[in-house]
Image (cartoon, rainbow, N blue to C red; front, side):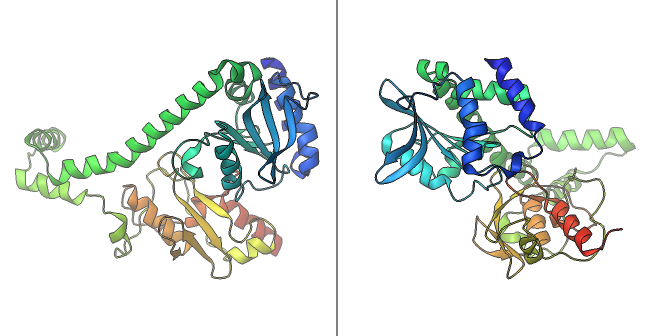
Length: 351
């Protein structure tokens, strides 16, 4: 079964028309074959129930065992965005007590634990991307989380819980590390002061005074978000997504990107470095050429918000400005800067 899934994914990756599949084609050519390879009897509507009714609404598929709903799957076309469909799916699943749910366009599979607390973002525990991920890795996650055998045994839910708890732990640590650092440098103990002083002496031959070390540490304080906008100095990430700054060229507005069909007005963008910035999101306001930061609901210029978020997460000060399009990406991983380049090429800016 596993090797067959790997082969199927490899064949999908080689299909040049994959992104053009509509919803019906996606279901027939991608979703149902994957479910079949995962052990589900796709010919038995009592096991793989299409258009399952939930309070006058319908879920595309309910995977059922022993007359019980085990997994809800909502499907979209291969080229469709998965945004704005999460809450509906999770609401259906929550009301029915379904503990596993998937939202997919065939290429991207967003997996959720619907009965967990919090909004839909907090209940999303993993994403399988059959194009971006290694085929064997994607096949393994499909097997772990959606195979009939593992759903029946309870291992699928156990695996999902393990990933979910690990993600919560990781997010909590990433949120707390800057606080811990601030506490250490604002209220340094003697051991830290001595360590910095001794290391400095070893490097240059001169040992700094205690007060000099304390002042230095205070300057490393990471300012909270509420104070960031008052600071005019630009900040950049230590290891930005590109080794070079954004080249000066004709500006591309968000409206131009929308008009070119590369993004949608109101679409969510995600901050590039997914590990420390996994919860940092903003929606597009094409008319105002701004991003609406989801945390505070306020509009910001693309580069300004990138600068704010880099400072928020404690990245180092740099004399160069932040090239915002290098940091924002769409749900399927396309950088705003790369989309801008497509528009510039269409306009004839690039030769």
